[in-house]
Each structure stands twice: as structure tokens, then as C-alpha cells.
Image 1 (cartoon, one colour):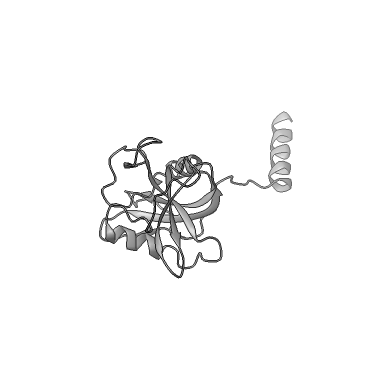
Image 2: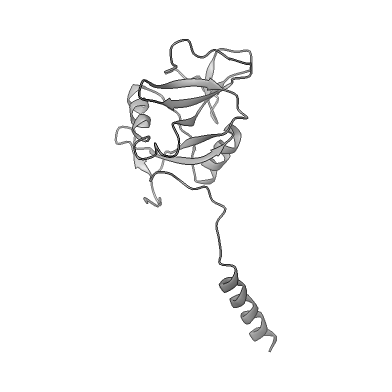
Length: 167
């Protein structure tokens, strides 16, 4: 009898309170860059830099590391279809230290050799602009430095495209 009661209670809870996921909502599917074989996805939930990196880790990747002009142009294509949500995204580049003008990839601490900042950027405007976001507009698709506490959409990168949901 206890077993039937437990099953009934579980059934009642599932019907009354359907299971839900606290997962972040992507605003694009996964896209594979055929040049490097990596997969990228834009997420439109606005998060601070650290939370965005943690969410990317949760889906098996990291904030996107843009290493060259080809990857930069590829990242720019992710904006198509998401203009209604946002026009800028966190990417996985930050200052090595607050007072440094050296930029590194998040998670590896390797120096970012390729940079595509908008002219007169980085400027550290207001102080502590230690993280990089990609800004898309009708005039330019380049990077800007920004404080890590600000909330932005973000782009995740996975080196392995196996077992991805491609929706």
C-alpha cells in the first residue's frame, strides 16, 4: 500500500508541477566553424562575466576564444537572427590583471594574440573594465572593454561538437 501511495504522490507532483529546467535559454542553435571544427552558440540571458563563463562550462565549453580574423568574422555571423534580443555578447577574453593592458583567454590564461577592439578602445572608462564584449551595430562589429559585473548575453565555444543538441 505504501508503494502505491508513493507512486500516486509522485504522479500527482509531476502532473501538478511539471519538471522544469533552470538551464539558460539559447538564442541560437549550435554552429560549427568548419575552419577550426569548434562549435559556438549564443545565449541571450544577460549574465555577468563570471556567471556567463560558468554557464559555458556547464554546457561543456567556455566563453568563446577569438584567436584570429576568421574566428572573429565567424563570431559576427552569430548575431544574425538574434538582433531582437541583444547587440553585444561576452567573449572569453579579459585583462591579465586590473592594471595590465595584456589580454588573456579565460580558462587558459594564455595571451590573446589577436585583438579587435574598436578604435580608442580599450579605454578602461570608469575603471575596472577588465573583460571583453563583442558589440554589433550597423556601424561596427568590434570589441569593447567592460566591467565584469555588468550583465550581457554571451557566446559559448566547444572544441568538441559530439552529442550536441543542434536546435
